[in-house]
Image (tube, rainbow, N blue to C red; front, side, top):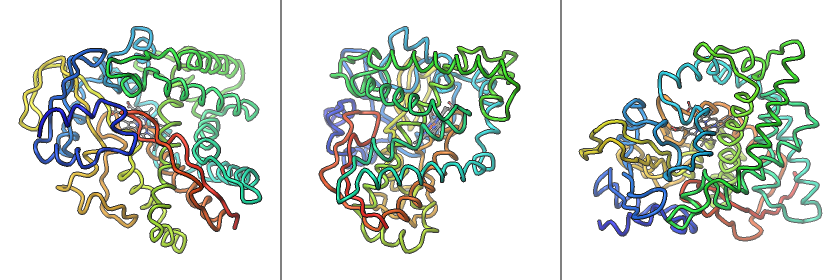
Length: 422
Ligand code: HEM
C-alpha cells in the first residue's frame, strides 16, 4: 500500500461521501500502524494512524505512555488559548491528575445512577417527537439532525446539571453556535475543516465557548448562595478534586466540556442511527416488531456509524505498537472507524446487524478515558429510538443526507425526512 492512499485520511474531503472503509481495511490488513506524513501546518510532520483493534486498545490502555496532556483529541497542535482551555478538561489530562478529577464524578455516571434519569429522558424525547409532528404536519418535511436529534442532548444536560428550564433554549442556542463555529474551522475540527495546513484555530467556536462558560460560572455562583441540592452541580461544587475544590470558573469549563463532549456525538448517534435503519428497512421492520431489540440496535449504530473517527495521543517516551517503533513526541490517531471493522474481532464487519453479539466496539474509547457519558448516551439512544418509532408509523427520506466535512466527526449536517404520525 502506498502512502498516498493513507495521505487521504487527513483530508476532510475524503470523508464527504462516507468513511473510506475500503482504504481503512486494505491499510489495516497491510499493517495495523502506518506513518502518515503531513508536511506543513499544525499536524506537521505527521502522525501514526493506528488501525487495528488490538493496537487501538493497546494505545488507549497505556495513558502514561500515550499521553492526552502532551497533545490529545485532535491531530492538529492547538493555538495557546485553546490549549489553555483544554487543560481543565478530563480529555486533556493524564494520570494521576486525571484520576483525581474523574473519581469524584464517576458515581454520578454509573449505569445505575444514569438509569434513574430514564423518565426524564423519555419525557424530553416525547416532547421532541410532538414538536417534530407539529413541524412536519400535513406531509411536511423536517430536518432531522437539527430539529429533532439535536434537541435531546442539551435538554438532558439541563436535567443532569439542574439548570432552570427557562435557560434550556439559551444553552441550546449556544451549543448550536459552538458546533457551527467548529464546523467553520474551529479547534475541535481544525484538522477536519482546515486545508491540510490547519486553518481555523478555534475562532469560530471561541465566543460561544466563553459565553457558555460565563453563563455556567454565574449559575454556579447562584447555586452556592442557596442550600445545596443533590444533582451533578451540587456534587461538583462540593467535590474534592485532588485536594482542590472547583471555582465557579472551573465549573464553567467543566460545563463546556460536557456540552462539547456529549452534544455533537449524541446528535450524530441519533441521526446516523436513523439513516442506518432507513437504509436497512428489514432491520427497521424487525425493530418496530420487537422493541426489545433497541439496546442491541444502539450498540450496532455506535459500531457501524461511530460518531468520532479517532482520538489523538502523543507518545511520552519511545515505544512500540503493532511492531512499529514510535518515538517520544510522535502523534498517534486511534481510528475507531477502522478498529470497529477489524475482521479479526467482528464477523462480517461491514454488515449492519442489530442482533450482533458480542459487540465490543471501541466507539466510547477504552481504559482511563473511557467515555464518562457512555451510559447516558446509551440511555438517550434507546429511549429516543423507542419514542421515535412509536410516535411515527412511517419515516421516509425526503432528500439526500449531507455529511459534515470533517476528518474527526463522522456525522450528518442534514437529514431531510418525512414523518407520518402513528
Ligand atoms: C470521553 C465518545 C457521549 C462525556 C469520550 C471518549 C470517546 C467518547 C471516544 C474517549 C476519549 C479519549 O480516549 O481520549 C462519545 C460518543 C458519545 C459520547 C460516541 C455519544 C454517542 C457523551 C456524553 C457525555 C460525554 C453524553 C456527557 C454528557 C465525556 C467525557 C469524556 C468523554 C467527560 C472524557 C472522559 C475522560 O477523559 O476521562 N467520549 N461520547 N460523552 N466523554 Fe463521551
